[in-house]
Length: 135
Image (cartoon, rainbow, N blue to C red; front, top):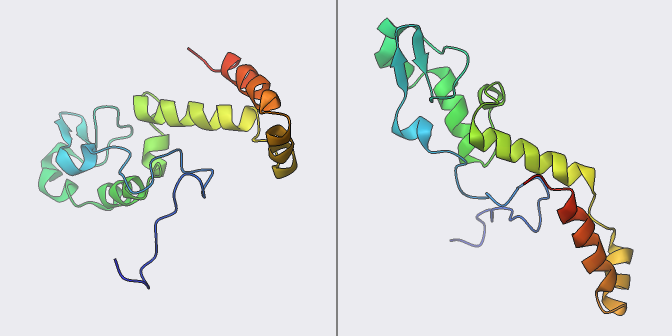
């Protein structure tokens, strides 16, 4: 890695990263697509139809597939994926974002105070946060 190359932003630096920096969230668009009578889908949870069944050769490098691959490769969900809430990956990420928004991370002053008080406030905070997580 050269000195001028951009270093990827990690989860500690990007709160929206969800721990997936540098990895595609899903490999499906690179490995296969689904040809059905009703049309071609990028994955088994896909919705809506990308192309007609007869256009299967062009579907592999269609604009939709390229956009999906680009977003997933950056660790983000594409607009197409967000229209497919049945996907377990989409569901997990949206749930994590909802949980992250429900109980915000404490500000720097409170984290500093937590260290001074032997991390007891942090233990209480984590207990409350974990209690609100779905099982």
